[in-house]
Image (cartoon, rainbow, N blue to C red; front, side, top):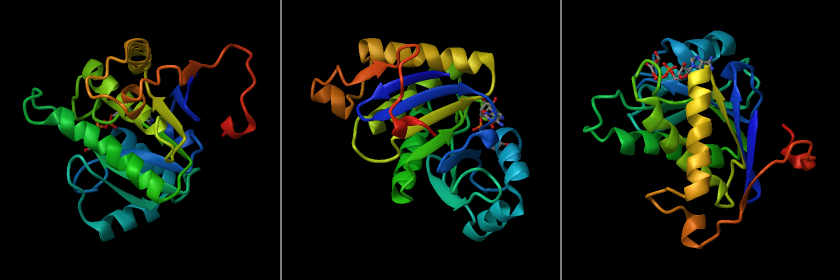
Length: 212
Ligand code: AR6
């Protein structure tokens, strides 16, 4: 696990299966029809049980770049936020904006549901084909921007499936924190607050509130 303290929040990168991670909100990599599918979507419906699909059917659709909330069924979470990433079409069809919007809508809904902790997969980088090295900074910039505000969720955990994804996310977060290479300024960087982020030192005790 890699962990960063950002303001009064925590960003974690872990490798694993998102259905096994306890959080107030679990994020699904869904499609616009909310119809279920492979990858994260398949795992979430399998582990969460049929109540999630029943609520998806009642909601109908979710536009690309947006998200909707359902029950979490049997998952170790209070709610599932179904976020719809864009299908990669070469990068000229507004994919970057749509991916950023899927994350910001997810965090907005998490705050609305008072989710203090949230577990997310790498949206878009599986079946939808978003290039990992381009998707990772978008995901992490959205998370860092959220943590630099005082709004929930304050504990953001990316649950990443394979080594390649873990490596790309670690590299991207190091790059963003080192250079603030955010071309869109975050709230913190516009205030010149570059000291609010620190990495947990080995052996350092976390505050009680940092434990999940
Ligand atoms: N936990 C965490 N990450 C996972 C898991 C898991 N259990 N399973 C796969 N991943 P994807 P997308 C990784 O395809 O690209 C579905 O059919 C995976 O290796 O789940 O947004 C939906 O119904 C990859 O790194 O989501 C949609 O139609 C990342 O999660 C479509 O796929 C995302 O892969 C959405 O495609």
